[in-house]
Length: 225
Image (tube, rainbow, N blue to C red; front, side, top):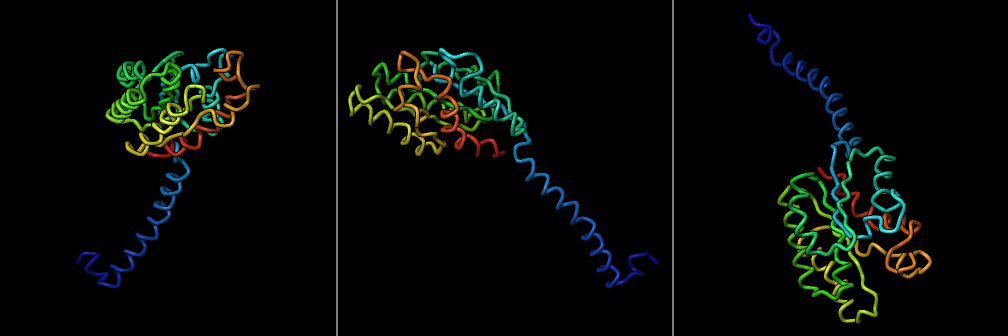
């Protein structure tokens, strides 16, 4: 007679309880490990920006992107940063460059910090919006999550243009359902002492503030699978 037949129904129930008791700690350990290592899957963060992200006028390693890399290391988050920012870049230039960057680096997250130079040149807001929209589409098509970084224009560019320019980021963010850091220079733009002599580019002292404006919107993407 086979062992299971000999045990009968009561024996079968007893064996089942033993099996469950043995597996429960294993399952619990697995769930704990998964929660503790929410950031464990290595990620590549591609930053496509302009001079505000390219450390214009700063010592190497002083900009917010470099500070972000230091923050990730300090928090033991396994992520590699590729800073593909170029001083003077417009949304059109970023749109043109992005496909090659996606192919080369295969990022998990793309941070799009562009638009300031469009605004400074008075370029049409709908054109900037179309370029950013195309970049979001390309990045997602390559399997990456996207974070948009917003910008304001000084009022001397005209209140109507400035308002439409700033609103464009929020409207696009909602439409494409992408997170947005609303204004990267929040807490900086109104403090002249935080700018280089050109009054356009922040000093190194401003970049921790800039990172503070971006980090809360980037952090959830790092946790996502």
